[in-house]
Image (cartoon, rainbow, N blue to C red; front, side, top):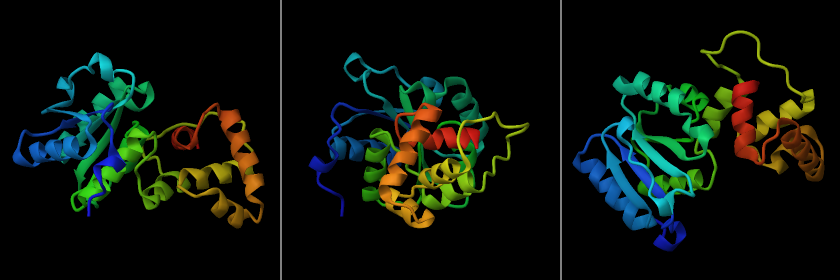
Length: 223
């Protein structure tokens, strides 16, 4: 069951679908427009994404790119060039991904905010779109655990830059980045939720980030 339209009213937001102009993507654009009231556009390639209109330029736009393995390198080059996850103007998510594609690590490092898979339901898609436009990551805890906790950056080389965090703060940041709530972190380290809040505040201050999303992105690049 798809939630009511009032739950996902995004009339001041913009969504751009990047992929072949086929019936599936036309239906997706129509569905998102009807369910969210967002301004939806379509284009066949990343280089032809239209500029934001004046009324929509204040808020970030969501770019939904249809994942195609053959275009993977081209997409990565575009992400490296534009840095959408860092500019704040465009938020990129991939859809129609195969669960076993194994590309999430690479794309997260380049600023992609979320992933939607071939068998995801329409209600799950809507929920993910809302979370991303609200400034959150839409990534499974399993993927974040693999990427952040295991630290498997296959493309990274050389030593990572020094950082000001203590070992305990690093442990808390890694759990936070993997989607753990304050209560879960408190139980893990046998400390109070208030102590966790203090640690989180100190972490944000030390690495100069305003929220959990930016802290997770910082951890992906620096730990």
